[in-house]
Amino acid sequence: MNKLTLSALIAALALAAAPTYAADVAAGKKIAEGGCADCHGEKGEGDDENPKLAGMAVDKFTKAMTDYQSGARNKDAKMAKAAKKLSAADVANVAAYYATLK
Image: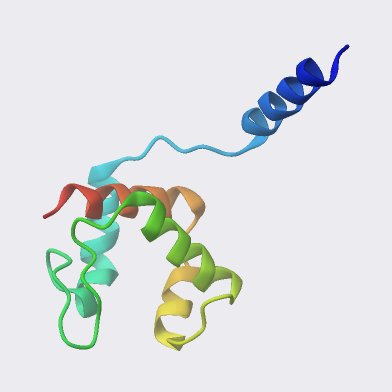
């Protein structure tokens, strides 16, 4: 097997092993209304103290949440606590919901 074929095979296996979640916008909306809205506003509009989530790119939202979950982002204890309650599927759903808003 040549190096190119081996590299392609390894890349394909890595992608296949990565978890993916089919986002459920309705489920994301329910989660957001049940917790996120308290600080970020009913439609994710944010305010002077909390960032706008409406229209945020899925990858940016997901990175922020996983950083809060891992402790890599720790400037807000309330946000870290809230993020740790969410599963990976929950994060994907909420990210998809906020991405649909303007």
